Amino acid sequence: MTLAVPRRQMLITTSWDDGHPLDFRIADLLSKYGLPGTFYVPIKNSRPTLSPTQIRNLAQCFEIGAHTVNHVMLAGVEPLRAKSEIVDCKNQLEDILGRSCPIFCFPGGSYNSIHLEMLRDAGFLAARTVELLSFERPHRKHGIALIPTTIQAYSHRTVSYLQNAAKRLSIRGFTNLLLSGPTKLWPELAYRLLERAASNGGVFHLWGHSWEIEEKGQWDSLDQILSILVAYKNRALLTTNAGTVQK
Image (cartoon, rainbow, N blue to C red; front, side):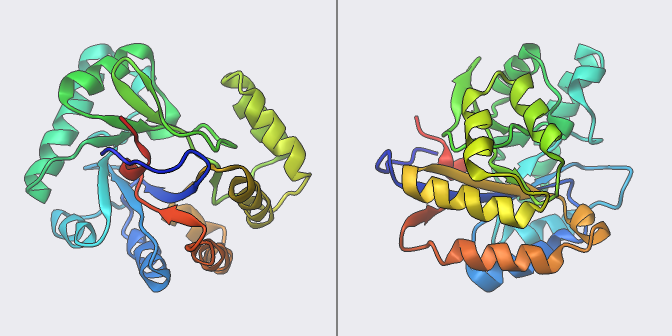
């Protein structure tokens, strides 16, 4: 998972949560543009989830990460339940894939320090958060590389971005939002943030849920943004989430 790149070079990565069957539509779009992607898959969920065969098929071209067994908000359950959700998901995915699964994503971005220790002890190396407006490379805490994100494929209100930054005491998040200018449309904000990342270096990380893109009718918008991302391939390194992690 070591990646040696110049500090000012931009990295572009994407990730997709919840293991919904519509993830294959995301995969088709990523393949159309030759873009990598990381798919975080729970074993079960209240929504439809990928079958073991579908997970193996998706893994032929894309990175697969763990997302708990039952899509559980870790901070809302007892430690023993949280540990089981983490360890059992890793074990089951590795049985399905026939290889190691070193990367994890917190459902709902919900976690505490004890969960980072559980991830480390289970053998995970990195975990994706729901921190927004970030161009930062992953930083280590309790032995786990925490992966922030730049933008979700969803049109949040400005106050939601501000609350996200305030929760994490992220001055850079405030700054990136302020310098990008006001907009209610996620594709417009994504393009502005992408331009800032191209100028200043760092990681541009787009993430989302395929089921949510379907519900909000955002497939054309996603196609548009992915076509813009690939246009930066001569100026950026296109990589998986694990590829953004440096030792």
